[in-house]
Amino acid sequence: MASPGIRLFVRAAACAAAASLATPAADACTRAVYTGTDGTVITARSMDFAVDIPTDLWVLPRGIARTGETGPNSLGWTARYGSVVASGFGIATTDGVNEAGLNANLLWLVQSQYPEFGEGSKPGLAISLWAQWALDNFATVAEAVAALRAEPFTLVTDDLPGQPGRKTTVHLSLSDATGDSAIIEYVGGRQVIHHGRAYRVMTNDPLYEEQLALNAYWKAVGGTAMLPGSSRAADRFVRASFYLDALPKDLSPDVALASMFGIIRNVSTPFGFVTPQSPNNSSTLWRAVFDHRRKLYFFDSTFAPNTIWVDLRKLDFRPGAPVRKLALGERQAHTHVGDVTAKFAPAEPFRFQGLTPR
Image: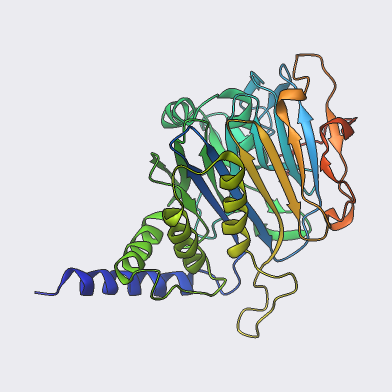
């Protein structure tokens, strides 16, 4: 009978092979959550992509009425919580946090397969609004997961801006001020939810179950002896997991914050990195780090000289308050410094991408 170590290796090798076949040129991101013994919870994510994603920061108050943007059969709701979000291409929420301390992140997952949307479907929710729906409606991961398990909508994907025929394929991660976490994927057209504090790290392909198997193999190897160092999603998952496990749980909030910046930078990819066998290997465009307890949202652009942050405790999220925007410029190459909470200016809200007419 094969030993547990050999069985782990075989399973991990099979998962790695599947990952290599999933896509020759993956778009990449990483997300990790730290929980300390004193109630400190910090979520960090990187945004890696093969093309530039114009990004700005927004303050969105409570009370905004939204639609799922899928035509007559669209989900509808009114925002219960105000949020600070990063927009992608000016048509989607790709990352964000709300005033209750919930964090939502969209990461690429080529293997995503969403349900068919048509006559008789549940109300539609455009994928551009998936993260925003969670931020608008829930204070905790448990609340969001309970709503998701009821499957109140059909998630509807569409073409990436400027790339006709290439669908947006992402999975969603949620984390909150208690340290709770969830990963939501669509596998074969069906929603799959991984819910619990153990699901702290997320990258891209392969599917999450397979990532867990790969990580189990490397845990058996032991990261002090050797860690996989490439920019592949499976390798980034292992590195982020190892360093997260190695962090003491009694770090002060400031040291924990510095540690999480260190981890998310460790799994970042230098801009312009290209290899012949993977010509679209994705460079890191920016990183976001959220201190859930102090409600500080940090934004770290590859192209800017300074890390900036927003203090949600200083913002006006009351219904009727203006939508506010912090324009970051081309490639997010802003020159802002430090606390930028007061630098947001009133602006017309961006319009979420809806279902393309057929």
